[in-house]
Length: 407
Image (cartoon, rainbow, N blue to C red; front, side, top):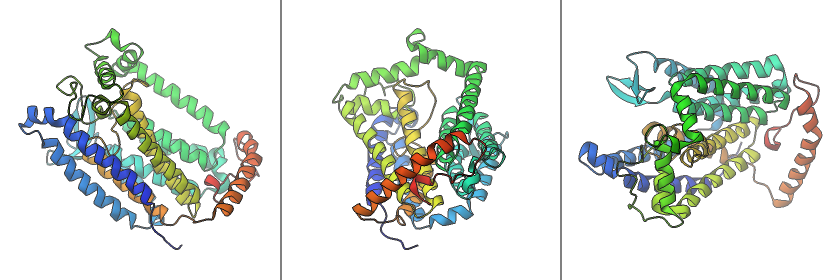
């Protein structure tokens, strides 16, 4: 395959989100930094360090041929699973706020395996499903192994517990599985079963049940389970359309929990208003669009599934974070990619973006006439195959749908 320049638009979008994140982390964390460490720039300095390392990782990974990750997909996933097990073993994991998500070495937390697993599972799914061909729709050869692998990873993540990451992992894997050619008659029952399982876990766990209750009526528990949601909504409402001004947030003065991590979007809304929130949302939509465009023009099936997995994972995590802050879904802790404070999330996100950028270096360049002709042919092919995908839950003789129009 002959390479060309990467998607510079995708680089600009990523760096724009990073710049917004650096500024907002400084603004959102200065009160907590001074209160905890006597230095207003404590978290800001570390965010600058992680951001610099992340950019280096992105450009290094951009130079690694994406086909190499196909060979390394299983070892990468295996390492991630081992780390997920280690974090649950006393002496290796660090517990904070009721969750055990960090691995520590010599008493120092060094990373979150769940962050790494979001990307390694997407790589493995892209590699595994791209080799399945038409057999991806078979019950024993496609669906059962898929459920087994994803179920193992999700079970380990939920043991931490980390509901937000589990949702992102399941959603990303399901999208890759569907695009690879899975039957809807397979995915719908599995989705319903997974939803029932999540509901059961929410009811059985007292803290998850309290979060669900707070979501239904946060004002009934203003000083307890509904406190975080209420403070986020107050911050967003106070910002209005134009915001209070950069640095002028009131909620960050000890009222809004985690203002520079999980709740940073609320501070953006308070200081920059609806305008600032819209800019962030637009950047993530553009990132998803250019990722899907890359998947459409990828030179092979693996590159297509890999691109759609990474771009959907980024967008899903971002919109889940925003949905939590706006009380659109029940509360769960998850960071805003490239914006929230945090080393593990930053490095993994930039690493994934570097892989996606390498795929963009091998996309097919087409004239508008060629692209229009291919789009029309692909649309016609999808219409012919739609009923086959809907009706053949256990496989069939029909040719499976190519990933985003690729063969």
